[in-house]
Amino acid sequence: MNRQSTASSLPAPVLPHVWEPASAQEAITLKRQYGADSAYVAGSTLLRTQWEGGLLTIPAHMIRLDTIEGLNGIMEDEQQIRIGALTTLRECGHDHRLRIHGNTCSTACRHIAAPAVRNLGTIGGNISSAVGDMIPALLVHDARLVWMDTEHHPSEYEQELVDWLEQVRVGRRSLYAVLLGIVIDKSGPDTAPDLHNHQNSAPFHTSLSSEPSWREISFYRKVGRREAFTPSLVTVAFRALMNREGVLVNVKAAAGGGAGLAMRLSRCEQLLEGKVYDPRYTAELAALVEKEWVSYSDPFASESYRRQTAGNLLAAGLWETLHQEMERG
Amino acid sequence: MKATSMQWQAVVNGKAQEMEIAPSRRLLDILRDDLDLTGTKVSCEIGRCGACMVLIDGQPMNSCLMMAYQCADTEITTIEGLHGETESELHPIQEAFLEEGGFQCGYCTPGMIISTKALLDRTPQPAEQEIKEGLCGNLCRCTGYGGIMRAVESAADKCAHRSSLSPTAGLPMK
Image 1 (cartoon, rainbow over the protein chains, first blue to last red):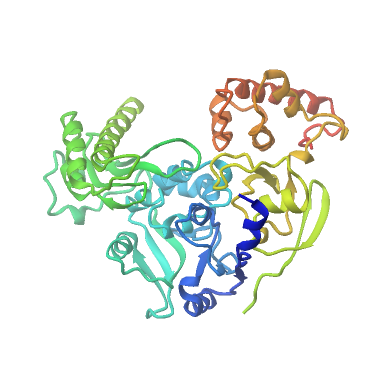
Image 2 (cartoon, rainbow over the protein chains, first blue to last red):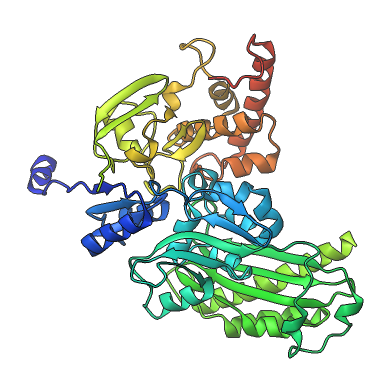
């Protein structure tokens, strides 16, 4: 084929306009004006893979989010950690406050892609993709998303991550809302369990009131086809409080990975809630994850393989973590 | 509403550059096509292989993922910007890769060396796990990584040794 004549017969590529909104409201105005021909752009690491892979066309209008003030950095008050949506994954992974109060999130940030990608990629972009590997970790921290949407009253509002994922699942997510930040409640080694929420849960093997010292146990596990910048096959996260007798309360487990939507595993949580961990739960938990988690098949892995992997990851992760805790005393 | 300017400026390998380019143009294309710095390699173009790695203000970044506006007004270092005490000498990291056989076809080598530079600037004596993590975004299809691991360990020693001899000891080497 004559390369020169082929090249000349192709239309010249249209270069996108790059807009600099000064506020989230301005960004939304631009998005409403240009609709499907536009995209919000933060680190653009995942968008680039989708553009180059032909999954998405490069939009005619790129709407920068880095020109909006206040979307960068991590802040804390007495109860909460707030992460700006444009905070890089690197910064999140290195932040000591997040390591203390959001350990699985911190671990997740250090295991997404490679260091160079984490220097550019943002936590907001990871979440907005709806398939980012941060999401299972944020789910076990009951994370809330802070949005700006001029069609919503009030225009700035918080939404449970789990509720937003449900909107995504049913195709009802807002196409115009700008993610401003992520909020997680602080936790720590001596966080007291919420007794009120356990009135109707499984019976405890020991009295909560007799045990003042509770510590958080958590882990995050990921299985991928390769290191570097590939989507995971399966990602799981787990978080609970445990006392000296080994009673687990406030159990939270989630699974996700690949192009599938992450979800909380409530039946797995119920299995362990209020119980002292027993090795027989290992097989039971793995089997329950396989039943509960909804995944998908693609040319790389079948749904049943993903489910089995998630079950094994969660069960083995819990077993390993508890043994490490016992060794620590 | 304000649009991002076509005027782009940055310091590339110590030299100020100013040009008119589309703000969405990839840094990889600017380096190779506009500035003729072809040591930065094109490969996967989606941030997986690390062949296009450059330093932006000292941090490793995939130039295939980065658009012009994202690196405007920064200091960019490519493989051409690394050298020893004089411009005609090799950087100790380059020497180490040569001596330890840290490459075969050489296509991934500029990216490997840039990532190694970032790693050693941050962690002068990295443990094995730190080397693996620091270079996990750089893929080599030839060597099996044994030579690369040896090269990074050797480079760490060389950099530490030269740094101790240098009148500006303690400062990261160019």
